[in-house]
Length: 203
Image 1 (spheres, one colour):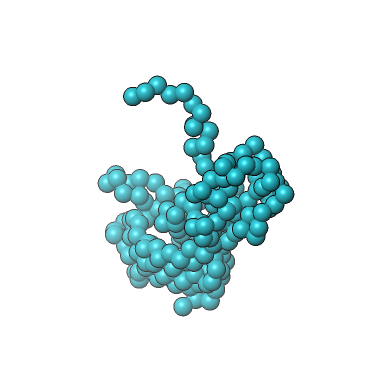
Image 2 (cartoon, helix red, strand yellow):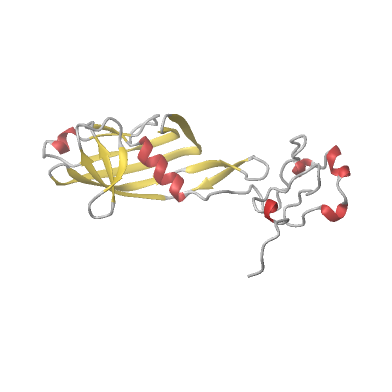
């Protein structure tokens, strides 16, 4: 296994010349990637092991398969505390070499399957690993089901006790499910709250 590094790279020069298949494995303590022009980082709670094999399908087409086992650090949707989310990501994608490609990207093949387009034999797998990890991760997480969230006025973590703004909200306006006041001093952390006052026609 390769030592821990910042970028997972696989060298495909020999494979493109029609000889050996390619293999790479290693560990990542984080994963830097770009989405458009913006740089992002996936944080891991512990070293994340990855392994990938690339086999020729003839011509410039190849197939990558392997695994990635990160423990992703996400933010609690209510209080923003770190939450460890263990994942086991199965890797599998068609690949196509095109020297005109500047940066690797996922496209759609004639068969309808996704294909990883790349133009350099020394291929950086960061973007591909990041995308497959994010697709495997939940959209949101809670550090505990009973999380009370943050005060919408001062940002105090209500899991650590009430803040002075709690007294401004009548008891009957406390949200039983989220445990977060829904009065003027606080807003429910619920995307559908704004719909409750709409006068909708009966179906």
